[in-house]
Amino acid sequence: MELSARRLALEALEQVAKGTYADVALHQTLQQSALQGGDRALVTELVYGSVRQQRTLDTLIQGFCHKVPPLAVRLVLRLGLYQLRYLDRIPPHAAVHSSVELVKEMGWGHFAPLVNGVLRRYSRSPTDPLPALIADLPLVSQLGCHYSFPDDLVGAWLERLGERECIALCEWFNRPPRLDLRLNPLRTTPDQLIADFAAAGYGLQPIPHLPQGLMLPHCGQAMSELPRYTEGHWSVQDRAAQWVGHLLDPQPGEVVIDACAAPGGKTTHIAELMADHGRVIACDRAPSRLRKLEHNRDRLGLRSIEIYTLDSATAEDFLEVGDRVLLDVPCSATGTLHRHADARWQPLKTRLAELLPLQAQLLANVSRWVKPQGVLVYATCSLEAAENEVQIQQFLSSHPHWHIEPPPPDFPLKAAPEGWITVWPQQQDMDGFFMVRLRRDS
Image (cartoon, rainbow, N blue to C red; front, side, top):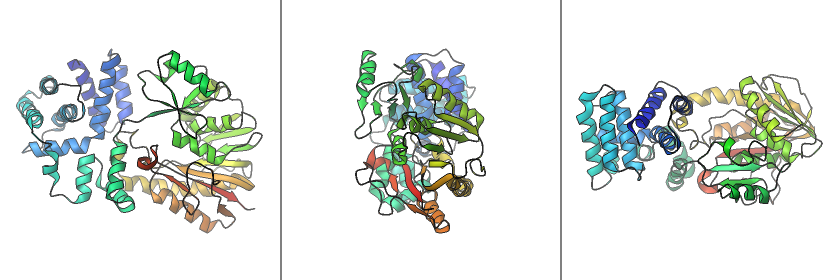
């Protein structure tokens, strides 16, 4: 790969270091470049990988440097070490040489010997130097350094899962995210969509027990360039998120409300499950994100979806209107850390302090939108008990006319004795999710 591509990766990482989200920084950087194909893919890998493995890479840098170098030099070292440690297809001499040239090009030439020395020492190490560097740390920090997670996340997972399952979860989150599709049954069938992809050289695979679910093992194209996308034959949606729609179980002719709808994956799934017959009310307070929902509604040819810009935490527009209501609340997203490279570095305590009151307010207000005897499904893509089990327990304690309605015995995702479902990625090989169906008594 040309040095210019590594330069682009470094520019994106500099923006991330200033507070820009990794996906935004990468998109902006690639938009301004002329790179194509494999070079663009490798820039993406370098940026996301360096952010994801940041703690491990910094542990190695600290172990090899007597003094912590400036941030710009650390970013170059992260890029070089990431290539050496995680990318077998790049020869070690190329990773070392390009990093030395890059630090010179960036105006930090006097650090070139340091960069050269650190990377050569690592590449020539007969064994992995990391275990010796972290041997004296507590277990939480050892795991955090080895798998590149902050101690607060690792500590919470250790407490809930034990060491073996915690390690398995960390390993799962460090794998590249898989691409799941959801076919639109109003426009195609599984066999037809598989045939359409096969004709274009792609091997779609059905997802067991999930009627609309298909997995795409390999994809090097933009979604809009894949077969039948513009015709509305499918959407991108992880299998765990698809199960939320099945737990809600919307029926044709009903009034169903999606209270936090944008960007609309679950809204469009609801409409498809209802055969586009009935009324699907989609609410969100972000007009910019609702535009994506509007686009997908039209692309998929769904006529039952009505879009409203409002704040579901306070709005009284739909009191006792919904036969079924979905409340997929804003959350810490700790079940989808593999999809968001920088999310693991956002302090969990700070995020929860903002999210927990909002979730409780949403649940209390949106529950008033449900008709007597109606259903509300509460869902998060979080693994944190405070956002999940605790929120539901607190809601039920102050709303005596509600109860948990467990899924039917043949529901493929098994519920806990309390009736809620927690999806652990390392056990079920899908995004982490929490979902529970609540029934209003009167």
